Length: 405
Image 1 (spheres, rainbow, N blue to C red):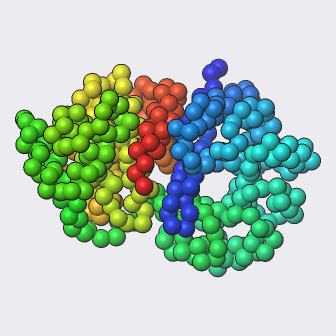
Image 2 (cartoon, rainbow, N blue to C red):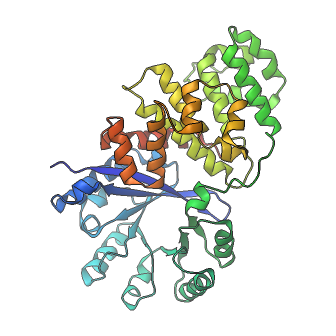
């Protein structure tokens, strides 16, 4: 029986909401868990090797990868293929503390690898591991806030490394942990911030939306020159984009007319969409913008071989705009009223229905680490686990290359 493994990732940020790492998670489906015990090791190693061994520089762009491994994988020699400067191995709470484990950690540390204790609890058997790890991860959702403070202060009194709060789901918990000296954070608060108020669209967003409308009905690129000339920031960013490695031009482009000739209407619309998504100035805006761009790229890649090129462009917009209501702090219906989009795109965004909806559901399930939903939507689209994982990894590399921060 072939092993089946899906990949998920979750951002890890610092106290200023700056992305510093991703936790990469590897899961088997329910069916594969009943197979031979070697399957989890085989599947995990396949995904890990494809993820990191073949081009870490373009994949992570300087961010760390926290890798959640079971005991069999931790003991395997496959993990020594990974670049030690980019990875942190998480020791799960299910891994039994033993002399063999301690010796293995010592060995890997001598090779330059770093470690974290996941879901740490203050039990006597874990004390031997504390001097060997660079990070301790604390689950802050499991107990009341006052108990969380007590735990943080106790751990801080006996441990001098970095602390990471995981399962941070509210602003209040983030502020509490930050006040107690926690350095790093992970959780749904950063991925799904509360949409508190319906605010008006910011001026830069208005400009971008107006241009997007013009592009949709434009028949001659010359019609777009004047609107772009009136916005120095847009002109600057357009020239920078056209002169980037994306286009590999033999010589630099220095004016709007040349830039429009190079980029074309379809690419111009996609570029404007990226600007619209990244225009938010909220604390979590940068991280959310990355997530939205990544969703768009995943949806687009999943469409390869399943839909035509034009529909792949639509899938990109579906994923990209799926967080636009949060980024712009207004209902999705109001956002779409101001934005020219194809009807199947609107149907997917407003009602999670239509032929594009499964692609968006699959991208969201990957983010949420809902592997049952991943498998369900992958089957609906006739995507193999390899297809899903490859789309995620390619999307991550592409998104990081945009350097949206």
